[in-house]
Image 1 (spheres, rainbow, N blue to C red):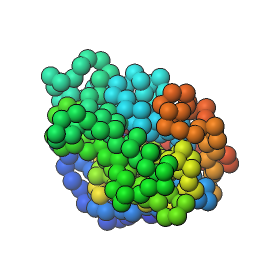
Image 2: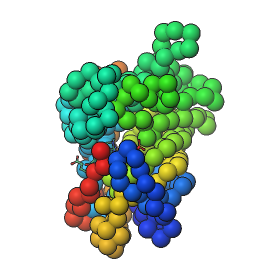
Image 3: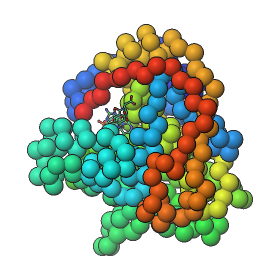
Image 4: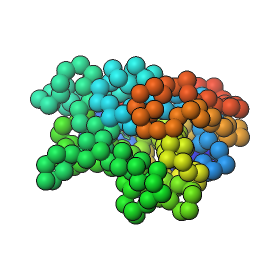
Length: 283
Ligand SMILES: Nc1nc(=O)c2c([nH]1)NC[C@@H]1CN(c3ccc(C(=O)N[C@@H](CCC(=O)O)C(=O)O)cc3)CN21
Ligand SMILES: O=c1ccn([C@H]2C[C@H](O)[C@@H](COP(=O)(O)O)O2)c(=O)[nH]1
């Protein structure tokens, strides 16, 4: 939590105003931030200086792992967070590749689970990584990427956390996740949870101990209409100790994640938090 608040404070103190064409809003911006999560000791990086809707964050990562590309599928899992990008962005609504209401296009898991090969056909990056890690193999390139610049015009948004690289040291699994663009008040609140959960889940289904997750952010920003509540309310609050995340131990395979896992398989213990703050969302 301290590293999150330090980043927020750094943006407030040192950020530079940058215009953004896509959203038509200015952002106070810093470049480069590195966050680390101690998954081995179950230090769940949940924001405590406002109420965090952590179940929505887990629903998003489950949807990515399943290769979903429709906001209705995300709603069924338990989050409405993709509704606006699928249905309210003018550029996407006018895009001839959009297949109607709720379509998000070829993004995130839809790419990672069927990544187009240059020679034709596609490859399921996630399944290959799970198979390797389950057999104790780390080929130094166990990379789940959602980034395909040649497919940007086919999706409603370019992936923000676009790469997850897994590594084995003995029986311990590590994760390096990279994010190109980060809405610190809204998105990062979720992305920290997702990086943590991704390492915890992958360790569980491949039979390893989780170690640390390293989260690299390139462009970290606060939108102009989010600055006041961040600076004058959230940053004035004292954080509470980190809660713990409990994952159903019956989740044992990628197939389990694909078929029966729901948000009921995740519990948070000891979550003390301040009141909710509703931040504006830039579509
Ligand atoms: N501008 C922007 N910021 C983002 O963080 C973001 C996008 N766009 N587009 C794609 C996804 C969607 N994400 C979202 C979308 C909405 C919330 C949101 O409204 N969060 C509220 C309530 C969540 C709830 O009730 O479930 C929050 O207080 O955290 C968070 C992340 C993260 N991503
Ligand atoms: O997981 C996510 C997804 C999105 N975001 C934020 C980062 C930006 O504010 C917008 C995306 O806008 P771009 O113009 O495509 O950079 O969404 C996030 O923080 N986390």
